[in-house]
Amino acid sequence: MLLERATTPLRLTELPTPEPGPGEVRLDVAACAVCRTDLHVVDGELTEPKLPLIVGHQIVGRVGAIGSGVDGLHVGDRVGVPWLAYVDGTCEQCRAGRENLCVNARFTGYTVDGGYAEQTVARADACLRIPERYSDVEAAPLLCAGLIGYRAYRFTGDGPRLGLYGFGDAAHILTQVARHQGRRVFAFTRANDAETQRFALSLGAEWAGDALGPSPEPLDAAIIFAPVGELVPAALRAVGPGGIVVCAGIHMSDIPSFPYAVLWQERVLRSVANLTRNDATEFLRIAPQVPVRTAIEVLPLAAANDALASLRAGRVHGAAVLAAR
Figure 1 (cartoon, rainbow, N blue to C red):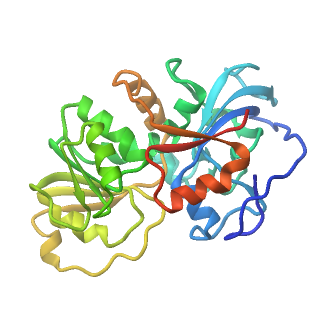
Figure 2 (cartoon, one colour; figure 1 turned 45 degrees about the horizontal axis):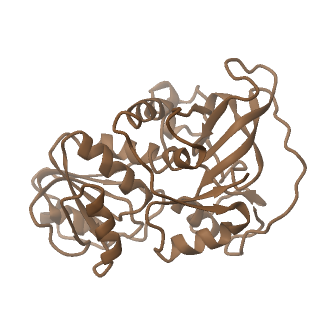
């Protein structure tokens, strides 16, 4: 499913079989979950994609061919490919242990081709082992909604009261992790979205309500998954003194001005960018222990435009997954 120009539908097309170069593997794609970042790329809100482009960065597949210089992977191995496609390992950020901020990073489904396809090529050192307990379609949402959501979660400290703003694919996974670790979850959604609120409560959230309204009690931390700048001052008002607000998305609408009093008393506002391979290793170890269960809607690859439209309209509860085979 090819993106030829931003803001246009993806086009089902035949392309030559991709061949892996040095350090790369070719994957026979089994599944690729649909992410809001894919929507930002297709809708032109992320402005520097490789074009034409195969979107998609939550890929599960099996190794079909191996390039030179690859160790540790074999034909037939099942692996996952996340958003972070390549880091140089030598820049100042990489040397400081912040490979998620690598100045020469490449990103799956944005600056290199991704997984809305039957086959794709990936760097072998970006590939992740998938826990055996998950099927291909169940595992796919773990590779961004899970991984980058978990990175955001790590920055929320250990206070018991956690708010999640925007209850989609990432929040439904993180709710399960937080409840497993004994934290209380408060889900903030569109005011009249009773269906999503019921979904959040079914996963263990103890309260669900209007994202722009008051919290039922002061929070220790909040994660904003929805790309809505208006939620930043709302979340800052919801956390108590010393509270932490984490913006987890790669794109967000403009944040409106707010009085300093909303930030005062040592409240913290921070963003999270991308992920590290250590994040991935840790989360994929924890997920089966919870165990995280992904709520999925499976569609054929050719229905990618329909999946994106459903996500755009807020009709996806959990994660949409494209099954390539």
